Each structure stands twice: as C-alpha cells, then as structure tokens.
Image (cartoon, rainbow, N blue to C red; front, side, top):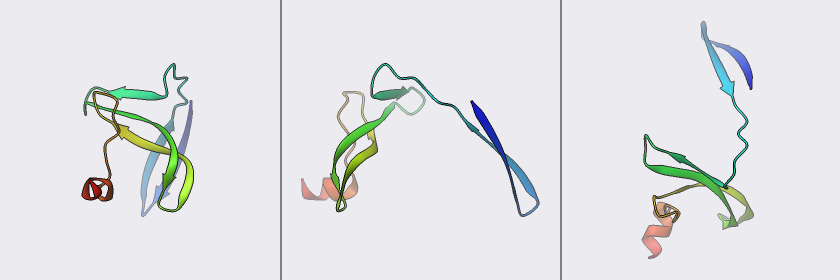
Amino acid sequence: MSSTIHESMGKITTTLVVKLELEEPRIWMDDIQLRLGLWQGFYRESDRVWLCWYDTDCDWVLTPEERERQ
C-alpha cells in the first residue's frame, strides 16, 4: 500500500493506492452491482488490455457506440 499527498489551490488531498492480488481477472463491487475487469481486444484503433465493466452475469457492459451498433 502506498500513499501520496497532493496540494492544489490551497487544498491538501491524499491518494491511497492498494495493490490487489486477484484470484480472478474481475473484481465484484457490491455497492454498484458491477465487476471491474480486464479485457484484451481492439477498441478505438488500439489493440491492448483494457479495463471494462461487467454485469452480474460476467457480460461486459457495452459502450454507447457498441449499443448503437447492435
């Protein structure tokens, strides 16, 4: 775990960074009923690993552009 302190416009904020060791490539967030996970693929002219949202059935949540195409 690491912490950094930032000063901006007279206000001091702290950012906490926690490294998670995951057993699965997605993490469930009960408060918002979604999973955050990794997806390897091509999106917006780039082929790489992306962070994306998954629903309760582990299907990824479509972007507005993807919904429009369906």
